[in-house]
Amino acid sequence: MKTKLFLITFFLTNLTIAHAFEHRAEVVTRNEKNKPMVEVVVLTDLVSKESFDGEYFKIVKGKSDEAIRFDDPEELSFRAATSYYHLMRARSYFVNNIKSQYAATLPKMTIRIDHTNQFSELGHFAHDNLEPQFNNALTIPAGKGLASKGVKPWGMEIWFRPMKRVHLRDLKTNDLGNAEFQVLMMKFRNQIHMQTLQRFITQVVIAVTASGSDSLSTDSLIRTVGSSVIMEAGYQFYEPISKFFSRKWYWLDSALVPEIIYHEYAHAALSDHLVLSHSTATIEGMADFFAGQIADSPTLAKKIKKYNTFNGKDATKKQDYMLQFEATAYANTDFVFGMLWEIKNILGEEQGEAFMFELRKKINTNSNVRVQLVEGILTTCDEICVSPFVDKLRILKALNLRGI
Ligand SMILES: [Zn+2]
Image (cartoon, rainbow, N blue to C red; front, side, top):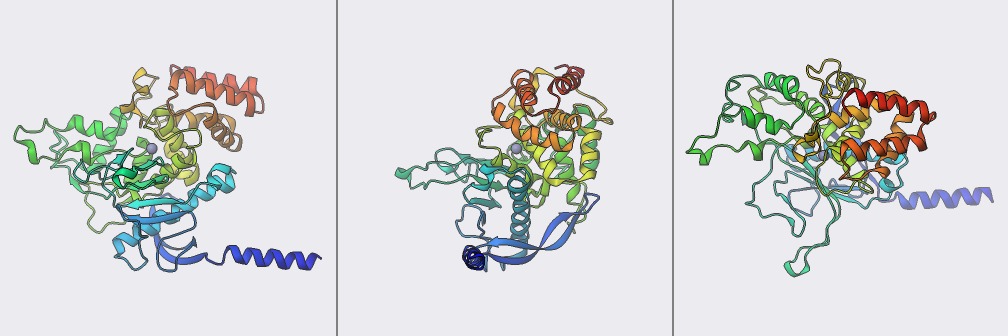
């Protein structure tokens, strides 16, 4: 009987994996110091022998429905392989480590690389001419489509924008015109650190000249993905990879940055409670938190501890809570990220991680930081914390120190 059962199980298992293929490919990974490197890895759970079409993710170019092929030009297949690999890691984290039923049963996602169109809730893709997007990434909610216009329904998708190199001189940065990007990032971290990089650069850009029709718009070129701490990790990434690297250039090749891929997948995996309607400090902070967990890098953790605005040891300007944090323009400050990270450290790694995953049920995308997020945190502690009374006191003490 046992043998028979074993044989049946064996047969069934073989049946289900009959179409799963593997493919060896070069991808960007991180070494133990969190520095980027190129490594050959095995991509699993593919349903095609020729393309990046898998059980859970299909990687396509732009608006196409066809999966990118293994033998497509390297600049395309390298990005496809890297994003596929890290999406699988992120999925595995949510399914196996966090035991998320929702992530386990998410329908297969289409992942768009080199995609410049803006998102349209009705039409899926906004018109090609409408302010094409570069240097960022976006997770979009599923849509019903528009049969009368031939727009088919679509599922949740992640879009990686192509990178576009912008010379700092062309951004007409004031005194920073000849500064290296490193300097710009340091100023960003030290002075502002609580608004998006885009806003920061816009502020240092000399007012665009009157003739400025051909001037580059920083607005469309520079958007941050994730908070400034995650952003810095991404920035540091590209130096050893690119042959043409120059610090006088800015770009973000989002499909090649592991933390950005994790951030975007986290949005998808948390979307059972944190719907993907718009960017808020709460939803971005939660996605950053899980991006940090998936990256599981002591070096990155050290960096987060050192520089986050909430309580970073080396943040020149530790920031007390401000009402502005609730505004969309500030959604990518790392205040909430730093706050969640600190609460995890108070509760301990294991309890803290379970806590944050439970927290998503007690809040929503529109939760404000000062009242609803804090209430969500305290309610979660009542249910999850080992010693709720003591733990809540410790959490409240940390929050009070930052003016909450
Ligand atoms: Zn985000």
